[in-house]
Image (cartoon, rainbow, N blue to C red; front, side):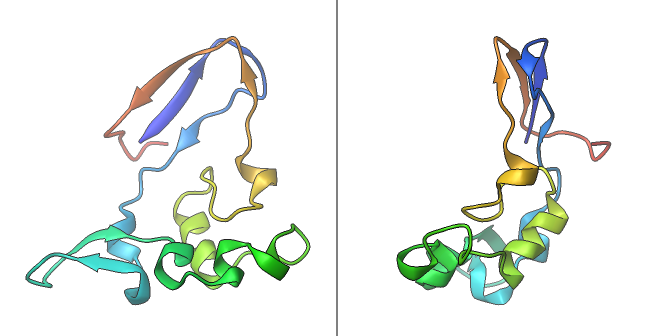
Length: 111
């Protein structure tokens, strides 16, 4: 999926990911088909493990203690413009005012 702002003011940048995350999904995050032969979805580490470390809750509920994990780093490499964990703000927040957007559900790898 890709999201491209048209006109607008502020930090108007492309957002999206064209990588097939199911192909690179770590085993512990995989959701497999009923027959177990293929990965059909990839959970977040928070969804898979329900741990404060991965969900950035409890003592991990602030930017100083909630740091990127091995799992979030895999996704950040695959999708550098996407939010990969709770405090992934510097590379993933864009504030674009008065824009229209072109949303593409099956973008080409050119981005």
